[in-house]
Amino acid sequence: MWKKLFKAKEAGIFLILVAIVIFLGITTKEFLTVENIFTVILNVSFIAIMSFGMTMVIVTAGIDLSVGSILGISSVVMGLLMNEKGISPFWSVIVGLLVGVGFGLANGMLITKAKLAPFISTLGMLSVGRGLAYVLSGGWPISPFPESFTVHGQGMIGPVPVPVIYMAVIGVIAHIFLKYTVTGRRIYAIGGNLEASKLVGIKTDRILIMVYTINGFLAAFAGFLLTAWLGVAQPNAGQGYELDVIAATVIGGTSLSGGEGTILGAFLGAVIMGVLRNGMILLGVSSFWQQVVIGIVIIIAIAVDQIRRAKER
Image (cartoon, rainbow, N blue to C red; front, side, top):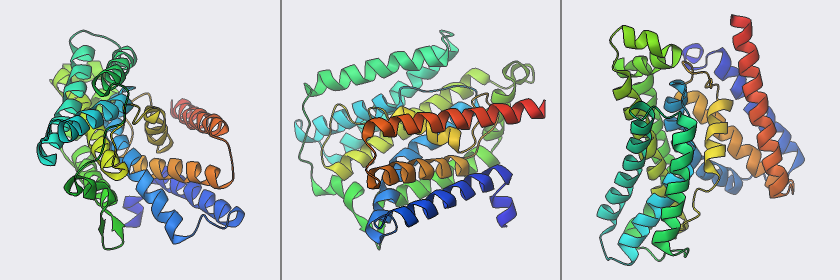
């Protein structure tokens, strides 16, 4: 069972995670406390949910730089509907999620129909989403929200935070979808060879649009949970998250060349990112140096992937 669950690459990622945890456990007194562990798990849940969608995108040899902005605009829309329009939390969340779906759909259409490169189209949508978040909110945070909304971010089921439950459920669904369905296999095929996929009759445009739409939905869903946890919607919510999400996905073994990657790997990558950030905070590393470290980690992960692929050729 364990051999099937942990392939060679994922086992290596897991061992790296264990090594980091041991190091931080030795060098800091606070890291292995129950309170800090739950803080790490909670923070990981938001990035992990987004990394599940990003995995599908990168497996197709694409990229989505707009996920942080999608989170932000979705958060603002939910907040405005609840706080200023008096709309129920349920419908406010539905509309916010539809905003994420709309942005993801727009990304997919720009890439498949307008033939824009994923980097260019999603970079543009990054700016559109963030700009709209500031326009709609006037640059101000939005609060308060009813308890029926915040419980989704602040509630507990036994000892486990609600966002972690959501993350686990979404992760299992995403894993089954990507690994065991026909559509999932076609996603891998597109990333492996787009032209060959077209020749065998795979509707590549339809699948690419679907993948980017799912990614937009999951970014908005992470925005819902983050807003519920914080109890406030902010136009700068999710700013910079695209870097953490892409880093988690790449660290988890998803190849930027496409055709390779798993949901389990993305989860492990998200945990490594969360542990690294938490550990650097406990060690007193400034936020500026944290960005340097994360950048170096991304470069190393990509370099390792490229070297491995070169050896396979």
